Amino acid sequence: MGAPLWIDVMIHLGGLAAGLALMTWSLRQAAGHRLDDAVRRLQDAGPWQGLVAGLAVTALLQSSSSFSLLLLAAAAAGWVRRPAGRAALVGANLGTTLTAHLTATPHLGLAILLAGGGLVAAVLGWRRATVRAAGLAALGLGAALAALDGLGRALVTLAGPAGATPGPAGPAGSPEPDWLAWVQQPWAGFAAGLVLSAGALSSSAVLAVLQRAVSAGFLRMEQALPVVYGANVGTTSDVLLAGLLLRGVALDLALFHLGMNLLNALAAVPLGPLLAAVARGLSSDPARQVAWAHTLFNVLGAVLVWPWVGDEKRRAPSGGPPPA
Image 1: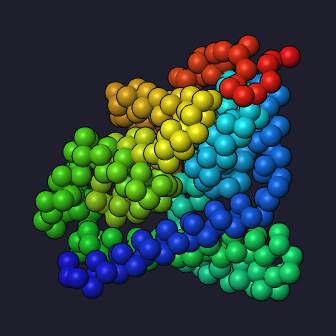
Image 2: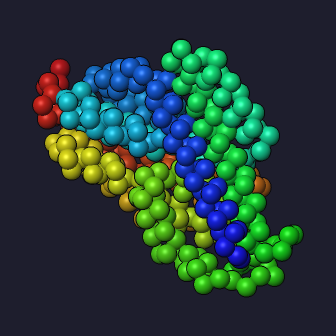
Image 3: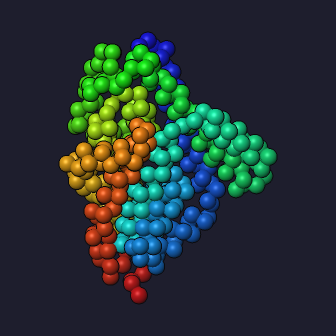
């Protein structure tokens, strides 16, 4: 494992981060004022409307953090009631699972088509903001998928000889490095997911890398699950910071977000083998299995916290109007 190969891995990681960032920013620009209007409508929304809004807007933006931060700002302004805000955060957790399915099986041909088509659309439609933003979003997605394709090939090379079959402790026929033995421990996998997600402010990027690691044979599905749990908790860091700054209802929602993801992680630990088995039953592709495990994990969390979503139904948000 020479330095050039690790440099190659780092370059692809940078391309992945840049592609996802460009896609998210462009989608945010394409949505424009319509996104703000959608959040404002949550003022009179019930929990189920909040759930659908959080799911749909997050799936559109491909970023739960972007939606959650906007939601907290709206709550601080008195535009969002607690039940709808909590439900919207649950929906955001569900909506963000779409990204893992998009990055599950990157195809270089599709990546080139998206990037090329997006670039052409952005150039030809530069004077039309929506067309330009949509083109740049396609370019970002194409760049992210191309980076994932390269990352996957680099990780397969790191994993060992071509054609090696993943074993229970690592790729067969290759010595297991110390860092790999460390990350295969459940507590270490959780810590790695938490720190990387908090540092990158994105669980999607962490999951995309995890998908490549599982496909290359570095981790088994059961060993990858703690990383998923940690990434889900780590992604709350920016929302929690915003809540601490905004205080009031925004802080209540940020703490609910953190508590929801922590509770989900704790509840999922004993269910890990079941989640892994169901994910394998839904797909034979290792990367797609990670995507399905992430989806099932967040559905479990939604079911667990839903009884708390409607609390304080009659209580008005701080600074907002009283309930009708």
